[in-house]
Length: 588
Image 1 (cartoon, rainbow, N blue to C red):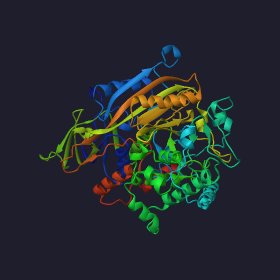
Image 2 (image 1 turned 45 degrees about the vertical axis):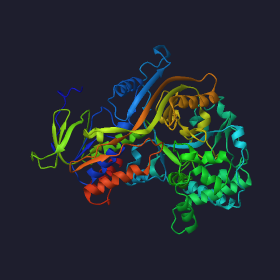
Image 3 (image 1 turned 90 degrees about the vertical axis):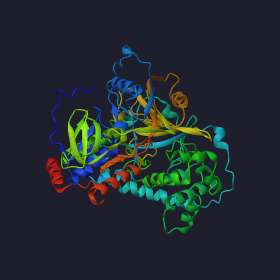
Image 4 (image 1 turned 120 degrees about the horizontal axis):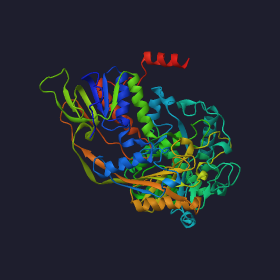
């Protein structure tokens, strides 16, 4: 129970908009509405920013959150389990120096969220890092299975065009988005984790001078660049032709001028990606598994529909070659906590634009202002005892004191692992002409035709999220594993904790037989259904999905709400002239 006796009172009781929660959607709306001239109060019942996208800055903070989850006080999260194999004597103590993020999102270069951050002049507020290669665990036997049908071939020209486009984009690459602002040209020894030391990375196999799909034991690099398609010796000419034809289809399926691609898509919307590839563009099953991994959908490939897969594949391939200095990358990630850092920067931007944001103060009740106590439509009673009046109240159901219920079968397992090993092979530069070493990588352990894959997002120590000698992995249901520092891993899966742990073990076995998990957090994220707000002016947000990449529907929902309040989508998050002048003066 919070003690509110010593906190200062809020400056006003009358607001245009009350926003409860500091998650991604709430914080985007806070900035946009403040910049549109609305008076905005943003509250959070927690003592930290981010909500379900929060980050914790010590292992002791994680332990406190786990206790809260298991007491039933954290909506949408259950069954949190912590396993610690490192005692006080090992030098870890309370675990300060770690940053364990609940949402280490990937952000695609061509995502609408990143585009809006560019337009809002906010990208310089983050430390951006490139996401490197995708890796899939496949045995020699799985790779040897041929395609079911005969390929049509003859589409190498597409790959060659893609190669030229990627190189031109890299050469002309303007330092957009501020992602590598102020960086100096790096040397491999300086930036590769474990650089200068003998490591598993030296076992990465490469072929010709151009490129080939790299391999470390059973982990194989996914063919996700045009160079991979054009030159890799791991693909036959038939495979190369079919894969090139499919990539052409991905980039044109929603082009109204391409009637053939549009017709194929409309006829196969609900066809599974695996069936579609085996019948329309027949390629070997292992390539289908690799392509499926690029969707970042944690479901089994046989359950992913073409309608779900194509938008995600399109944003991946349209982003390739666009990131300056690391043309093999399609996505970025935010250091120091992932999307938790995004929430904090957005909340600060809202405050600069005139808003007020306050932590540790939640909404106790919300109702229509029938008595007319104030000039606003809604009356909110806060847990601090204060009363707030507003025309609009925005937040997830639980943040607005509304009931929620879990949806059957809608849950995901997630985990974070602090490990003691070197995994520098995941972060090696793909091409010699790249000036930036990736700080994150995606590892996928398939679950078979009917099983959910485990996604592993590995993040290196340069993201500043764990002590220099360790790495972190996070698990979600559908398995996503994310390496945060030399020593931290994040994972996600629709499968069980056991499958998640087994996927982590496969990565560790490649690194070293002495690899050890020092600390792990596992929890289940449950999709909930909110009670529909009945009060005029109440807007219930959909809970943030458990996606690995930050999806465009996050922005679309905030745009709809902004239009409902302001009356137009024009000017969403645009920088007011006075704020622009203020920033220019500070930079001079």
